Length: 240
Image (cartoon, rainbow, N blue to C red; front, side, top):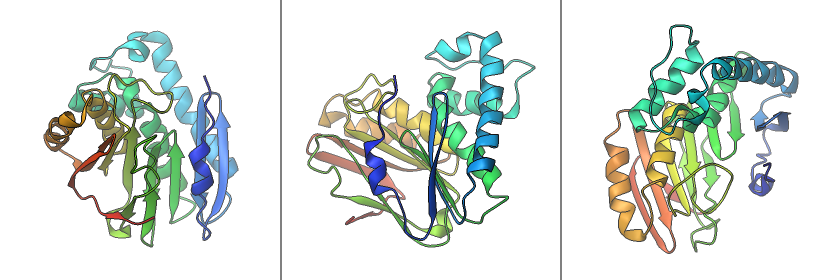
């Protein structure tokens, strides 16, 4: 079921052209140097087709909550989704939003040197100036009160969010927000889901951070539940 992306009212950087591209379940908010809506739609359809074609034959790709093995006919995006989800010990569809963000984003970098793509809380970004990403964490007192500072030297970068109390994505935990940073947006997406699944009380923050630290390629973790917060790695918190 579609849920309005209310947080997008905060996501309109003045030095970018901001637009939305929607195709079936995919709803991308894109910020770029110029209007690339036509190109973005073309790439979105391309990568959605690759996922749907594979999933129509291999039904467990859509439903499995555990890692799978890629079949011989798997395309690059499918192999990437399976590899990333295997590292995080979740099913491949835990990477789908990050996959669309990164693959569309990398394709659009042929047309612009800066891009920010947000897809249901999962972001792929390549920027030339420092950016602030506001953290929405449901009813937590930290919600909309802190932001992540992202250095352009650390991009392209994936920044993905999982929440047990907000949004349409499946989570078995109770976190207000789990944010994970990685150069691999698919891996960030899968890891955010995996960490979110084990956060039930503030006492679980340390376990979540340890899990994130154990996965090669993860650069930073932020976990918020109720009035408690924990961070690890390349996380710089600033005022919004």
